Length: 183
Image (cartoon, rainbow, N blue to C red; front, side, top):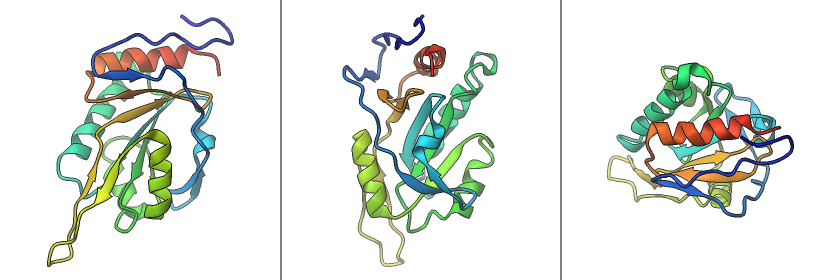
């Protein structure tokens, strides 16, 4: 357990990368699912789990967000203070209203963010998240390829770890340690 003023030493767990030199994520502003500008820094004070995806995603996003819902409810709800943030990599289609309806069945606590695709690409680069829009089909539909990682940011806004299809229990262990740290 971390003492006042110190960060927890995060354990080495399967499919979790612990950042050896955590750096602060540069602040950014996108539009949330209520249509309001939301600064990332407004989420400081609690750990944040960030996932980059899009609402038209057929498999990865529903599965990952479902796992984040289970994580949010794990350990008797003791992890609920952790903010779950879904950043759309498809700002052309993912309007605030679309994000709101997409996230509503998961949790009213989840934050959806959307905005200009170029701005989102710059934000994603700060996390080392990768995505790209595939060429559109004749009907105009397209897919966006993206990473599956979930990024763990501590209360101070430092990128501490990333989860690559880690077990819910291992993600809960890291999340609980981040919650125990002082703000």
